[in-house]
Amino acid sequence: MSHNSVDKLVKMANQIGKFFVAQKHPEGVASMTDHLRKFWDPRMRNAIIAHVDHGGAGLDPIAIEAVKRLQTRAGAAASGLRPGEGGADG
Image (cartoon, rainbow, N blue to C red; front, side, top):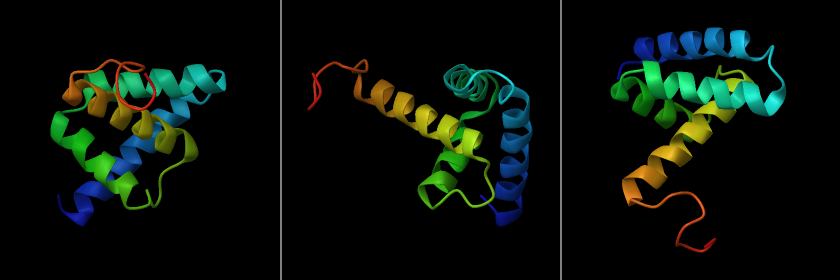
């Protein structure tokens, strides 16, 4: 994805984060994660995850946390495991 496209995703994520930051901390992050999962195209999600993997420049803290949770859910789904099952933690 081009640099300009990533900039647009960062702007969008921050706008969404500004809406959800009004909720209490854990609920706001969870709601933003759910929003990204439901309404963002998989290519958009993959691009913002990659951006966070490379430092997440420009993203607000709530957006970074939401994307990290999105990444965790995506990894668990890809492995076929639910969080807490198998692996080192279960």
